[in-house]
Length: 419
Image (cartoon, rainbow, N blue to C red; front, side, top):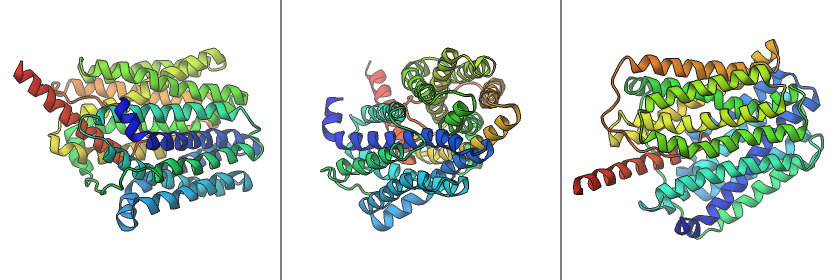
């Protein structure tokens, strides 16, 4: 781990600052939209727009990088991100915000692809697993830290929007000034969705449903808090607890994943999430209960993402894993686009509880569907390794995780044969 930090600390520092900026803008917009009097439907459109841009960026960014190079793409889109963060409070209109959110989602997606290419290139076969784990921790800590910054200023003013703009601008310095060479860029063409579904129906359905759950957390948690009457410090702490849960519970789930039937673990984790969010719908007015529920739903949703990828890999040949990761990322993105829109509609109809009812329903469907699939075929004889990755990661990290999983499986088989 020390070697990974020594060789890649500029990348980790830059990505950490980027995640602080991204985490700040998501929370700030939810709070500021309420102050500006935007309706829940308008805010759901604004929040959904980010995932539209993110999905588009994951598709277009590789070609941009091939044409003009990593450095130009990184610097140009980083400038756009900084500018957009300043424009939010300058033009307080929901439809302008929607366009800006599409653009900033696109920019963040492309920036992640670029930075993660450098990170993957800097890792060796021996350090790739540690690099991925440390990168996941940096991502989560960045978003958690962002929630503490929200309480330092007035969301109705400009300063809280200036801070993430400055942080994002600063984040490019350690990355662009790093001595790491610019990597050759190549990504694998995604597997067709029809083929991917035939390989793992549970993986495809689960990733689609989980896209809705995670986008609701990332996009609509602040909107929920404002509608529920929480103060800004309470909203910040609530969102922070979601990501603390995702960070803390990620590793125990990974440990269990390599030792038990993954279908049972997916099913039980989803049902726990469904039960917890239903508690939030009933008792959400109690702030202490809200924090516990946020911790639990964040703690089950984020590990489920990596768990579904690992489960899908169990039915794939090693050479097909990278192609499958692109398809899974796309399916998750489609669910993420729909999530805030449906949450916004439900909150408009039944009030703040709609936020929890939406996630509870999706988690319940996932758990029940997994139970059904367990009756259709036996579990695989051999399983791939679990790698902790987050939904905010690009296809580059997913492919790197797949590569590490293959290498790890080969090492385990070699050790077993030697024993």
